Structures are given as C-alpha cells and as structure tokens.
Image (cartoon, rainbow over all chains, first blue to last red; front, side, top):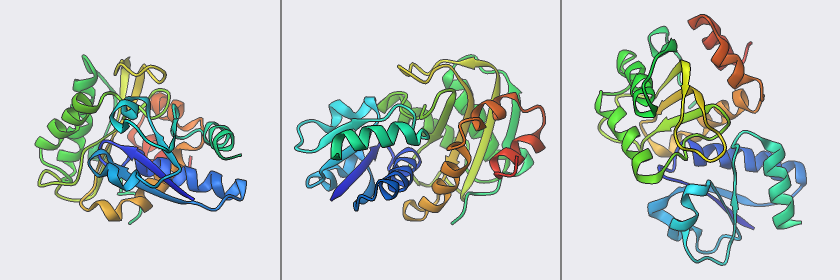
Length: 89
Length: 148
C-alpha cells in the first residue's frame, strides 16, 4: 500500500505526518510505504491509496482515486490512528 | 541528521509580535543570529504561508514555519519563539499560536531524522503548553531536547 503526505515544501509538516503515520501504521500492523512530497511533485501521489494532508491543500490535490485524509493536529497520533483505521479498516 | 542544535541565540521567549508575519520573522531572526539562514529566509517562510495558507499551524498553538532548501539556508537550524500574546494565523482549528518554530534545512532528503526528533518532542501533548509557559531559554532547550 502506498500513502503520501503532502505539504507546501515537502519538508517539515509532511515529514512529521510521514513519521507519525509510520508509527501509527506499525501499531495497527498495516504494511505501507509513506512518502513525504511537496505540491509540485503531486504526480508522486498518482498511485497512492491514501493522501494525508492539511485542509489548505485539498483543493490543490484535485481529482484523485486516493482517499484524502485531512489531519488537524499533526502530533496527535490518536487522530491519525482513528482516521487511518476508518480509511483502511 | 538529528534535530539541529538549539543555541541560546536561536531562542526568544515572551516576544511581542503584531501579527503572524511578525511572529514568523522573529523566528527567522533567531536563525539569522545562529548563522543558519540569511534574513531572506524569513521572507520565504512568509511567502509559503501567503501562497499555501496557514498549514504550518500543525497543532493547537504551534506553528512550524519553514521554506524549501535554497540559497537563504546557510546550515541546518532550528529557531524557537514564544509569544507573550498569541497571534492568529487564520487556521480553522489550531489558532491562536503562542509557539513558533522556524526550521531551516540544507538538503531535503536529509531532513526526516530531524523531523522525527520533532515528532518525539511534540507527540507529548504537554510540550506546546510547557514551551509557551517557559520563562528561560534553558527551559525551552530542555523541552526541545526531550529532557524536561
């Protein structure tokens, strides 16, 4: 399974999403590759099943087959767990 | 690379900013003082927010200001500013912001270990409030170092 975390710079916030998503997925025993990307390399998200991002970028991502999950608190692993479970469970 | 060190000059506590731009600039000033970035890096961080919105407010009360690696970045660095009066970034859930971090990274592919360290610090849900309430630079360094 492929998951991408998207932010404006591809460092910082998407990196935190990647790190915390990997921690949550490990706890959930779900195998997935999580990549942090910035908006200018959105093509990397083409074959992703899940896109993690913040509300600002939903419109920029546009049409996709992926399940777009909006995260409010990037450090709240409970929020990530609930939303990833709902999407993948 | 691990989280960049947080030298004294990169930390400012109980600072005053008129608005979010002022707060980001203060955090950028810390990177300038510590030699991690040129003053233009603050402009880049502000431009990212103007262009993409307040997405850098990644948790309640906390902004992680950053721009892409570029000529404005002189070395990997982290700056921390706590605000006497919080400012709004226009974020739907996480305003107002009382702690602004500024992250400068020289090469994008090397940043994930640093960011993992940040996650270690802030996955503790008390860390943001503890930073906002810190009364000394040493206290901020201890929290960011994960030892508080």
